[in-house]
Amino acid sequence: MGDVLVFAEQKNGHLPKTTLIALGAGLELARRQGGRCIAATAGKQVDVAADTLANYGVSEVLALEHPALEHYVADAYAQALAAVATERGVETILASSTAVGKDLMPRLAARLGAAMASDVIEFEEDGTFVRPMYAGNALATVELTGVPKVITVRTTAFEPAAASQSKAPVSKLTPKLDEKVLKMRFVKFEETKSERPQLTEAQIVVSGGRGLRSAENFKTVLEPLVDELGAAMGASRAAVDAGFVPNDLQVGQTGKVVAPALYIAVGISGAIQHLAGMKDSKVIVAINKDEEAPIFNVADYGLVADLFKAVPEMVEEIRKLKRS
Amino acid sequence: MKLLVPIKRVPDPATTIQVRPDGTGIVTDNIKWVINPFDEIAIEEALRIKERLGSGEVVLVTIGEKSWQEQLRTGLAMGADRAILVVNDKPLDTLAIARVLAKVVADEKPDLVIMGKQAIDDDSNQVGQMLAELLGWPQATFASKVEISDSVCTVVREVDGGLETVQFPLPAVITTDLRLNEPRYASLPGIMKARKKEIKEIPVENLGLDLAPKLKIKALKAPPKRQAGRKVSSVQELVHLLHTEAKVI
Image (cartoon, rainbow over all chains, first blue to last red; front, side, top):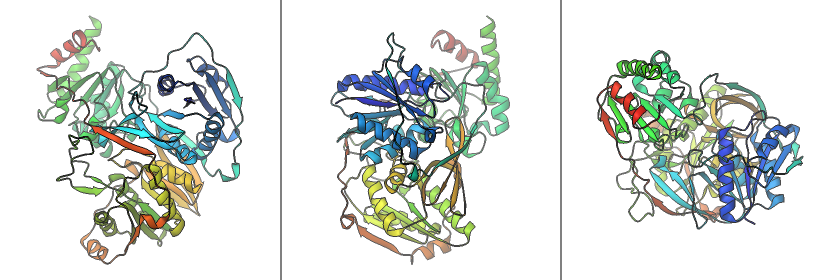
């Protein structure tokens, strides 16, 4: 009892930071529950990912290999994971709140008849979980009853697992899937091509809002600052709605939640739903010409200025700083 | 084609939410209640699919108090054909909601269920996926494009780092993302027509389901307030402080 099964997402054998965070959270929860932390990864062939996972302090790595798991699809993955969770009798099944985690874990919970808490940010002593609601305007303490329990964790709230000295045993399993009922087919993935760091992994995020006024200005005004800082680029929902940038750059309640060391909000007013996605950043800078903009209420450093002047100036200043 | 659209009543997204001092919930005085914005997108998509095919029926369903009729009427005024209100005033968790919806699906036998990816009150993002599993149906969450031909559904999904395309036969569950469409407003004739459309009420007890919640909210609290910092007077000062004081660049 007390064991935690972490669903460890892998991409072509590589473990994204969000997976290491899931492991970090899983290890912490297993300690609190007095159980073991087991990592499960899945695919057609997952030797490389499983071998890497074994370095992160878990008790065991399960490598679930099956042709139907070649690409992530919810129905096959839910079946595979439910089977091993049941077989191992784990208390909690945990994943990061990534697009895959959000898609998969509720389906898994329903398959197991389990209660589920999304976006957990804290584990409490008494076994309850803390999670945000209402765009982060309320924090709920929730109790899940029954076993197993299913949770996703918010990736900004936990530290990634560190590599350890010892290596966990890897068990290769071929899950028995009822393939007759699998109906979903992966067709293709079109990656947003970018040389920049991922939004959820970056140390610095520079986001633009409606104040940028056009897709063109995102390119000519904002991007030089993004690249000068080696940052990831984000956007407010208003900028996405206006078609300036694709939705996968959206930071907010219904987009990505980020907490970088530095978050620079440019031409963003600071709607509740945007703040929900960035207010846990360590240092927040706001540049906006409207001094009443709510973004200034959460900013450590606020500059009331015309962004079209201030941003190019900032690029210059940073270049100077780098030269000095 | 029959399309079922589950909807939820939530506080207007522009409302500032305040937690009650005793932590039992949020302050609901003066809150304007609306259809969850992602569910509005789902209604719009269902209407467009019906319009494209030239025939079909769009049925709304919600699980809540009698007053939730108001949001069903709004959806009917947008153009949905009829609505079902499963009357319930007890707290239900996401799995219980999915079970109620699965029962409604068993009775209504829709070809497609289309609903919001998440409700903006509890922000769970679970019910569509749970419903798909209970029904043994395919699911496509975070949809930004939906195409249907000959009972095969192709959906473009908004995932981390790009767009994913999946394909499956109907029936299925789809949940909507932001850019799928721009919902229409109810027209005046639409509002007039909606008054005569049917809203069937079903007491939740009549469904004979085990709905005991496995997730209980013990308490709500307001999040720690972030202190506003200071205003700087120039870009030079800003960059200087980020370098020397905050030490982040």
